[in-house]
Image 1 (tube, rainbow, N blue to C red):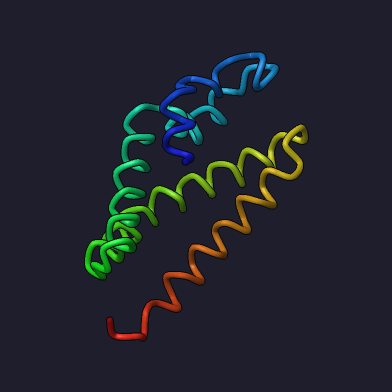
Image 2: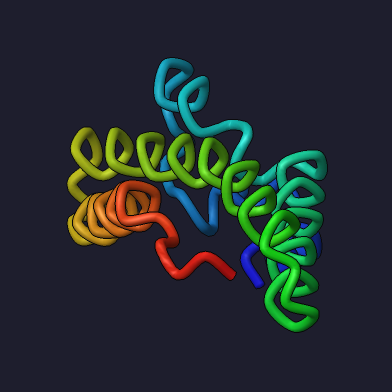
Length: 116
């Protein structure tokens, strides 16, 4: 879902109506990838791989999609944690991004022990 949102709203973080005033160059360098087409395409492909793996009971495809999606979600979480800490207007952004990062790490550590 996030990949589709990014695909249809490319460049939304650069819009001054979304992030007034425009972010500093250092801040923009941290999260500039978050609204690009290649990042949204990566999220869509990984999400589809996970869905196909779950619906067709293909463990390799499901786990591969999750492993491929993990760095992207980790980078997105870190970028928005930094953005939320440096910009007081996004006071809850870093909390939700940190929660997502903890859930991601917990999922990867727990793994799958069912042996399907």
